[in-house]
Length: 214
Length: 214
DNA sequence: AGATATCCATACCAACTGGTCGGTACGATT
DNA sequence: AATCGTACCGACCAGTTGGTATGGATATCT
Picture 1 (cartoon, rainbow over the protein chains, first blue to last red):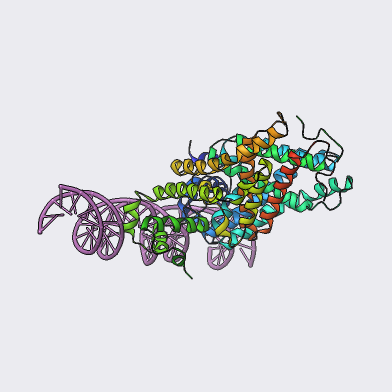
Picture 2 (cartoon, each protein chain N blue to C red):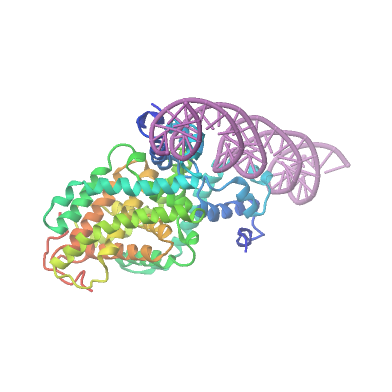
C-alpha cells in the first residue's frame, strides 16, 4: 500500500497534488515534503507540478486555502447545526471534533496547524493562509457561543465568544501535538473532554451545585 | 544582529550547537534547519558538528534532551513553588507560564512541541525524546494538582491529576500555534486565561455562586 | 619526551533539492 | 485546415543537502 493508492485517479493533476499535500505535509511537515515526494504520491510528473504551481510555496498556500474550503464543507454539513439551542450546537461541535479523532494520526491532524509551525517566519504567504483557515473556522463558532451567552443574560465575564472559539482551536491544536508525541489519540480525547467540562462549567447556572460532579 | 550574536563564545562547540538548535529549530523547524545553518549560527565548522553528533537526527535528540534539562531547571527554580497551598502552586505555575509569554515568538515557543510535529513519523528517536520532555514536565505538576484535589476531598470526577496536567500542556502548545499563525501573543495569553478560569471553576466549592462572575 | 586521545578545521563527495526548459497531446476557435 | 490555449511530460540544471576523509592543534597521561 503506497501513498499513491489513496489518490483517486480521475482527479485533475492539480487536485491530486493538493490531496497528496494533505497527506504528506501532515505526515512529514512542509520542509520535510519534497516536490518529488508530492509528484510521486500524486502520480504526476514534475512538469505537471510546475504547470499548476509557480513554486513549492505556492502549493503550500493553495493547500492551506483548499484545506479551509474542505474543512468548511465538512463542518457546514455536520449534524450539530440541527440543535435548536445554541449551546447544544456548540457542545455538539465539540462532540463532533471528538468523534473525528478516529483512524490514523496523519488523517485526523490539522494541515494548517502543522504547516504554520514551520513557515510562520520563512513563508509569510503560507502563514497568512493558515491563519485565515484557523481564524475563519473559529469564527463559525462565534454566533452560537454568543447566542448561548445572550440567552443566559451573561454579561462581561472577562472573556468573549471570539476568545472562547479561539481557545477551542488552541486546545485541539495542542491535543494533536500531544497525540503525535505519545503516538496515541487517548491524550487528545481527554483534552477535548476537559474542554467540554470547561464549557459546561462556564455556562452552568451560578446556583447549580452539581455542575462538575461525576 | 545575526544568529551568531546570541551564542556566548566561551561555550563548548557542542553547547553552542545545541543553543543554535534551540533558536533555529524553533524558528524554521527541524527539516528547515540545515546542518550548515547550525554550524554558522554556532560559529563552528562542520567537522565540529559531526565530531559531537553522529548525525543531524542525533542533534535533534540531544536538543530535545537538553531542552528537558533546561526547562526542568527553569521551572524548578521558579517562584511558584513557594506557595503553601498546592492549588496556589498550580495556579502560580499558570501565572508563571503566562509571564513567560514575553519577547519574540521564537524565544517563548516550545522546541519539542515544534519538533515533534515534523518528526513523529520519520524520526522515532526524536519523537521519543520530545515525548519524554513534555510528559516529564507535565508530571512535575501532578503532585500539586493531586494534593489540591485531596485537600478538597474531591473524589472521582471523571478526570485525573495527570490528565489535567497534560491538558495544561495541550493548551500551551496550541496557544503557541495560534500565536505563530496570528503573529501575536495576545491569543496565547487569552488561552492561558481560559485555562486559569477552568482550573478556578474545577476547584471552586460546589456552592460558590460567584465562581465565574467577573 | 613521546604516545595517546580529544577537539576541531578544511576539503570533498554523492545524492538530492527546487526549479527550468523544450517539446507533445488535444480540444476549442476561427 | 490553421491557429491557439491548456495540460502535461521528463530530461536537465545549478545549488544545496547530510555526511566523510584526513590532518593538525592542544591537552593529558606515561
